[in-house]
Length: 207
Ligand code: GAR
Image 1 (cartoon, rainbow, N blue to C red):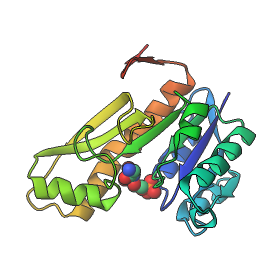
Image 2: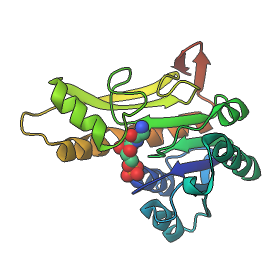
Image 3: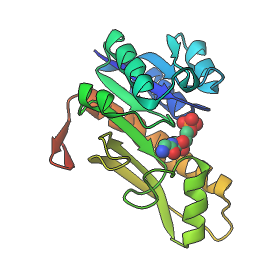
C-alpha cells in the first residue's frame, strides 16, 4: 500500500475528491496517509480531520526564504515515508531539494490545458480570468509530474470542457473542477499507485 501525502493551501475540493474516491475503493494500492498545509486556516485541514487523516501545518510565513521552507517540507515528506506526493491546490513552488528527493513521485493538478495558461503566476481563479480574456473555446485540467520547471513536467492526463459565452471566472472554475479536476486527479493517483504510469523523457505512457 503506497503512502499518499497531499499538499494543500486552500479549500481542498481536490483533496475531497481524493477522499471520496478512496472511500469508494477507487484508489487501488494507495491510501492518503497525511495532509500537509502551507496555511494554518486552510479549509482542506478540516476535510482531512473529518475523515481521520493526520495533518501537518508548515506555514510559509514561518520561514525566511523558499530554500528553508522547501527543506522543512522535504523533511516532513521523508518522515511521513511518502511514496506519492500530490499537489492539490498547493500554491507554493518548492525548490530543487524537494524535486530531487522525490523525482517521479510528485504530481500536480493544474486548472488549464498545459502548455496553455500555465507557469509562474497562473494559479487559481487567475487562470480562468486569462482563459476568458483570450477567447479560447476549450479549457480544462491537466495532471502532470512536478519537475523543477513550473507546470512543465510529463503530462499524465488531461480533460477538456467548452467555454461558454456567459461563463465568468467563477463558473468556469467550477466547471473545470467538477468536470475535469475531480475526475482526472483520483484516476491518475490510482494509476500511479498501481505502478501503471511510465515516464519516457518528457512524456508518459499508461501501461
Ligand atoms: C484548483 O483549481 C487547482 O487546480 C488550482 O487551485 C485550485 C485549488 O482548489 N491549482 C493551481 O492553480 C496550481 N497552479 P482546491 O483547494 O479546492 O482543490
